Length: 372
Image 1 (cartoon, rainbow, N blue to C red):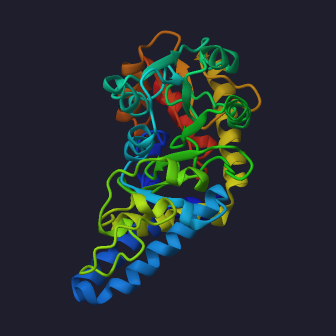
Image 2 (cartoon, one colour):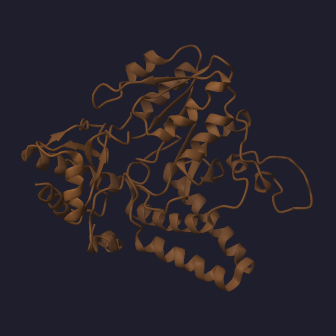
């Protein structure tokens, strides 16, 4: 992994172990941003085809990341929140319907659904059992009026990795739309939407996908495109987007209808550079390394008296490890680490550590030494 590590200048100053927050950019993404800025500064609109082609290429990369059956089922989003809103606001709700979610979800995957109360939609929150979200509890929360199940692929505070295959099968059995907030796993763990029955997902690129903030993507299964009311419709939502003097409100027959206006092209092109880097390593290899690092972290931390809150059962491990120090408060640990050049975080009043593929065991040791 030394080769990929060379792409991360952050390592010169920090032991950066907080990829579940905002990741540092690798050099290919930085170079892509500079190339865009230089080209636009020198050419303006004359460079438009270069960047239209680049956006199309990045769309192909995003589709490859999740094994989408078509790149047209992928659309770019400025945030995970936006992608959640596309489904929450566009779903064909009826008064009395409900949506089921995990009670410990990140707020971005709770508030858009809570905002539907005025339309008569109930939110049914499923509490965790300690460090896990039990599928039996999710099943028990469903009723004959459950229309959507929304979960994170990995829960942001506990690091619990949901069994998306099992949850997708449950949704198919119950006729429930399955939405996944995938921001805490994409880039570090494989996801195949042709194998796992996910109806839609969204993820900004600034965590495990190592891109800049404000550039991510969503996916919508083609069979749902006509059943969701499109929001954010604009000039580029239609089948003839460049014929500006012709008004023909025929929407694109795929996820492209949700790309209504100008996109974050510099962010998308840099995001693409990070995807190229990760796909070049191979997501299964990234997963192997992330699991090895977090296993090492858990073993070392427990030998020093820490408590590991996160589930480390097979299939439930993720890149997020939630820890409790034997005698220091999480805020104090985070402060001590920052002073020592180590970046970790505090979530749910626990120390959250989230290493990526380029990190080392030595950086894990550096964190544990700083905390002592």
